Length: 568
Image (cartoon, rainbow, N blue to C red; front, side, top):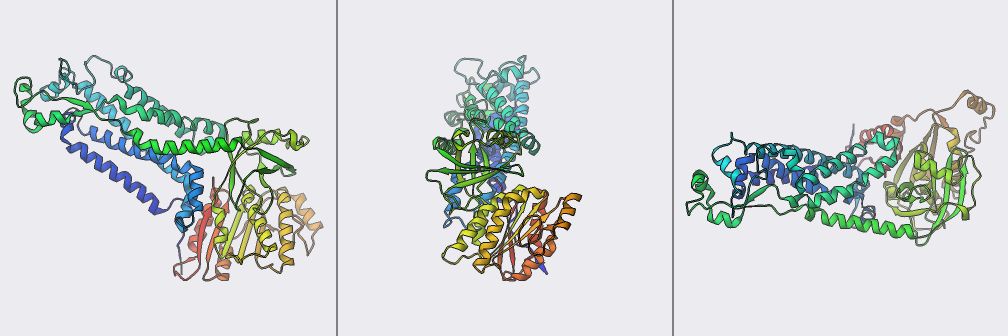
């Protein structure tokens, strides 16, 4: 009865297929060209088809290196995202998957780099073998070119006894190729989820080896090891005829000795634009780093969450956006993302930070949130702020019905949203397209509710005063409690208010039955487009994505759930 029509949590099929299609086209087209091109006929005599494998993978490598920096140019992504006239619907939501696309392109670089390295390994061995005494005929003749004056060489390995590894490391292409390979291995291995969780700092520092990677890539081709026949030589030396008369090259007028040259390096042409774009991105970040950030308030919540209120000249935000924050006292290089928890209507912007790694733990300690007395604002460490940047949650107001689901500290993106709803309900504004919000919060520790309960209580009171109690339906689920808490709840049970949160809405104990929840929402809004917004762990994300698929109608006029996951 129910079909599925939903934007996947990951990249859209169209985008992935387009990227694969371009890669396959470039690879096949380049491969075929090098297999047939007359100027590389003699090169193919020595190298065979591995020439085409090396060159085709090199072009795809250049293409993906061109793309890799674009998804992490956050200011560009935010600018495109804000231009809603030219970026609507599914494609706009794809901008929130910029890091997924960045990872996809990185896999493309790894695959093509591997093919390129393996192909050149075989090429080097073929070059070396063609200088041996076992080589004969045209192969031997081509390898001996360059031994006499006025001849250009085709084989870069000049003698057979030479050690191929030593010979390779004496060339620009060999040294830069080794540097590129080592940099890529270092970047890829330190980017695994395990490394990021254990030591984000290691991931952050090693990722900046990309500077060495791109510098080496730009000069890699200047070595011009792979050579082809020059155009002037082709006009005088007919390959089809002369390849069978190689013994007469020195004497026959119709077959002069062929001349060779290396191919012009082109990698820098592919990456120059994105590198300049990313350099501008870093310049903007440096400029924002210089701007003063005034810390107006510091609150240490009992649940181990630090709340910072800040002001910055010209700072404008939308609900659900995030900032990148740096604390030079902790690290002079690292920037970390934090969701804004304040509303645009407030005269400050705020973040809530929980210790979840070395950097955040050091930050909380610097602000005196680890059992120490909080410092006065004037004595606090300096902060730098870059942003704000767009995120999936900014689309909440674009749907008539929105379902917001948070797990644990993942509730922070929704704080700004709920505050914004509170202000919009308080002010006489143009009617919102958004008419109903379902809010779910799943949390293991009851103490985590403390900092958020005041906001919900204020919102609950305001909605009641405005006669809009129907606008927001919120459901809080406590998944972890002990015997003492159970006794406390039983002894202090109140029909009107919840024992844990103090709200009118009772706290549920256990996990939501998502089938029942989605079924009820679909029943309540049979012909609506419903945005589902989630911030939390991957396991729950997959469950919600599956629910969205299952409860979306196959009928275009029926209910449709559109899944959006908050990510940085």
